[in-house]
Length: 114
Image (cartoon, rainbow, N blue to C red):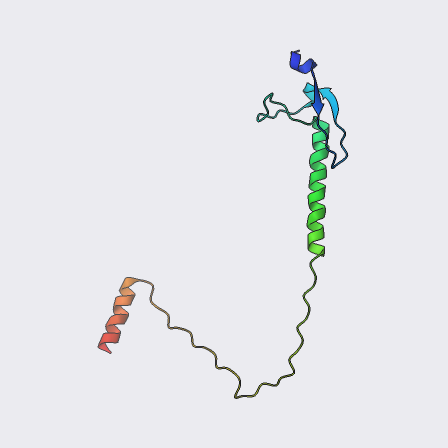
């Protein structure tokens, strides 16, 4: 056994999810390479409890967001009657252009010859 296995370490807990801070064996902590000593800040059981609580909170937030969206209100119908003179004419679409240079050259020749 190494001295790291025999040392005690502080699990930080989480006040948000009701996890109390406590002392635990260093062997109870997961490996965390980004930390100076290479161990995580929470013991394994509390880390699982914390991540599960985070997931459940995210699911609950997502469920609230979908139920809080109000249904769109129907637009009131217009009482104005349109006559044939007032209806706008549909706009004409612009003519399509050829995609490649060969087709462009041929169409220009037709215009010039025409």
